[in-house]
Length: 161
Image (cartoon, one colour):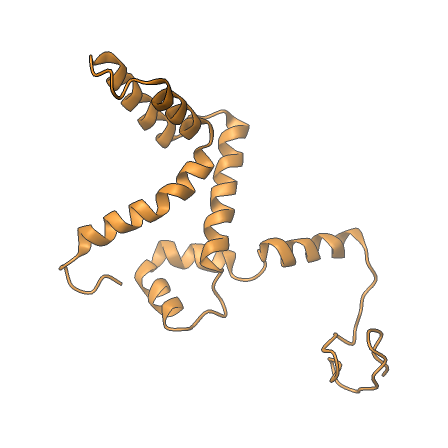
């Protein structure tokens, strides 16, 4: 068989010269959407397996991933970004307030009711408004803070993971 990519002759499933698959299917809407999900989101590779294992056995899943068993797991950064995007879309569709927005609003109202004028500035109001309006970004920005707080909380309690 001759490779459609580089012209090299081969007889296996993949071209020895460039690595292209020997069976190239026709480009349809279904194959395009499959390629889109594969290349951008990689949803077909371990998303539901990772979610299920993180709910049922979170310590095992994290230890296995850190020990190098990564074939069946979804990539952590892509996992966080995908779930925060999903969270953002769901809250926008249903118009629901988030827990973070409620907490920041309550904190701001509490500060506004006090006589402390140093925290009750236009910058503080703008910042809290931005944090509420952009809660997806706020959640991502809070990940290192929450992770560090969790690390400090479990420090000295034995093995963390």
